[in-house]
Length: 258
Image (cartoon, rainbow, N blue to C red; front, side, top):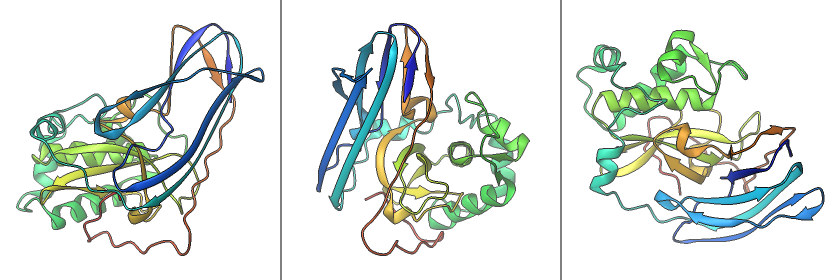
């Protein structure tokens, strides 16, 4: 729920990513003071979808429900992916962490062993503390502070992997089993010709994740952005569930979002 103080344009990124091989039943509705608001869907890279709306001042309510069935086909890997996700980015300053990455992971070849090593290293050096980081904190600040939330863990993993010449990116996901429940962020690394999840928080099984958006870092995957006006986020609630038992997770195994 948002309170728009002035006319604004808002970009929502909460719908599950367009995926081949799955069936999605979904409903996204936005209202302002009880009246429906028109949404425009825009396709984004890597299958993501955003919804753009324009609103006058008032109370905005967003409701999104989705049921996802099946297993998604693994996305093709392009040369553009390799180029884009090797570069430093706003929140994943791999150029500034190159010395740390080389000192800590020298001699480990890209693959299963390296992903497990980076995940373990980040997970043991950071403490998960809700509210401990700000919206502009990147991987360097996270490492210095030694605490953060899921996006901070993901940014540090991404920066270290890129510094080791492994393409890495951030995925915003719904994560059944996550406690506390919220939107979740994980890293993905390109090894063995496919994108594999690295989640140093260990807060939810990787095999149960559902992709929302993919990008260089949190700048590309925010669930809400506002332009031309101001809005206060009053409250929000996220719930993600899976049928049956949550899958087991082994950090040493290669797992893709499917």
